Structures are given as structure tokens and as C-alpha cells.
Image 1 (cartoon, rainbow, N blue to C red):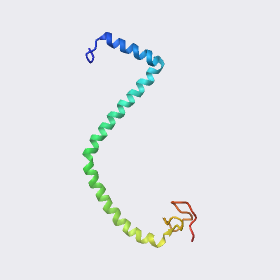
Image 2 (image 1 turned 60 degrees about the vertical axis):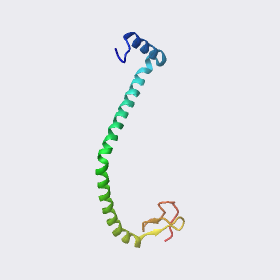
Image 3 (image 1 turned 90 degrees about the vertical axis):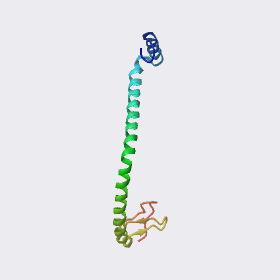
Image 4 (image 1 turned 180 degrees about the vertical axis):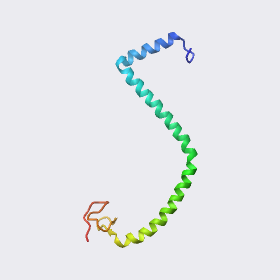
Length: 109
């Protein structure tokens, strides 16, 4: 007995599924059902892993952010001297750029 159903009830359910979907579509239905179950299981596993790793990831991100801030402060000083600003949108572009990377308008030199 599966879920309180006897063999007769299971046979009736299988016959109804065959009539509704047809024998040609049953493999497609089984494949999509299997993929759905697999995706749900992977999602549940990722959710539990994310909670465990969340604290260690936050610590790593904080450390990276501190390094990036230090590096960007040095590079911003160098890049500010060579930067070209777009007259159309005001976006900061590299010194050798001919067109604005944000709006695409030509940069005046």
C-alpha cells in the first residue's frame, strides 16, 4: 500500500494519466518532473549552505572592500589626471577614449 492506496486505486490513476497525456508525452512529462524535483532539491541545499557560509562570506567581503578602497584611492588620483568627461552626460571616461562609454556621444578633446 502506497499512501494508503491499494493496487486497484494505483492502476486507475495510471490509466487516467495515460488517457490525459497519451503514451507519447509521458516520457517528456517524467523528464520535466524529474528536473523540477532536482532543481528544488538543489535550491534547498543551496539555501542551507548559504546560511552557513553567509557569515564567512561577509567577513571576506569586508576584507576585500577594505583592500579595494585602499587601491582605488591610489588609482583614482592617477586616473583623475587623465580622465575625460563627456560634455553630453558628464560621465568620466578614460583618457584615450573617442566616445563616451555611457551615452556613446563623441568626446571633445
